[in-house]
Length: 199
Picture 1 (cartoon, rainbow, N blue to C red):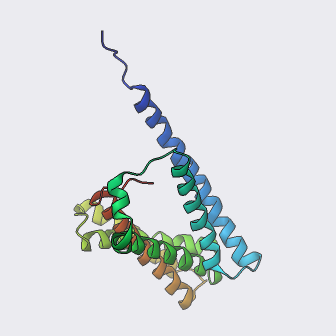
Picture 2: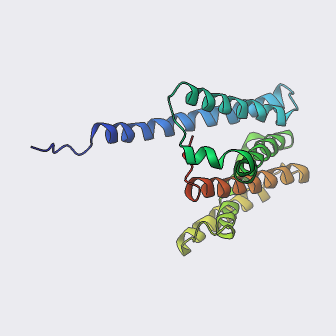
Picture 3: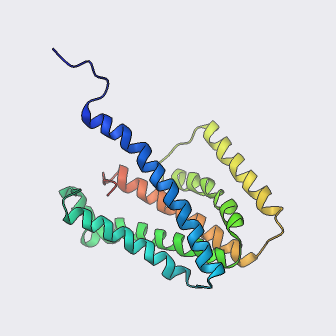
C-alpha cells in the first residue's frame, strides 16, 4: 500500500531547509551591513573595495570547498559554460557586476550613514525590473510595475527629505543599484537560459 504522507523525506527536508536558509541569510546579511558600516565609518577603514573582496573571497572559498568535499556537484554542461570563452562571456560579467555592486555600495558608507544607505538601496527594484525587461527575461504585470514604482517613489521622497545629502555618495549608491540590477539580470539568464545551478 502506498504511503499517504504529504511530504517524502527529501521534500520535507527541502521544506525545512528553505526557512532555515532564509533566516541564516537575513541574519548574516544584516550583520555584514552593520559591520561594514562600522569598519568604514567608525574604525576608519577607508578601503571599500578591499572590504568587498573579503566577502567575495570567502564565498568563492566555501563554493570551491563544497565541490572538492563532494557536498555539491557541478554538471558537465555547467562546466562547459564556465570555462574558456564561455566563462568570459557568461560568468565574468556577473562577477564584475557583483564586485562593482559591493565596492560602490560600501563606498557610499564614506558619505552616508547606515540608514540613508539602506533607504537608497530600497530603490534597487526599479532598476532590476527595467534590466529584466530590457534583457527580455521578464514581462512584469501592471500590478508588479505599480508596486515597484510605489517603492521607488517612497525611496525618492524619503531620501529627498533627509538632511544628510552628498552628490558623490548618491552617485555611488545609484551605481551600486545599477550594477546590482545588471547582476540580477545576468544571473537570471545563467540560471534560466544556461541552466546553471545555484552553486
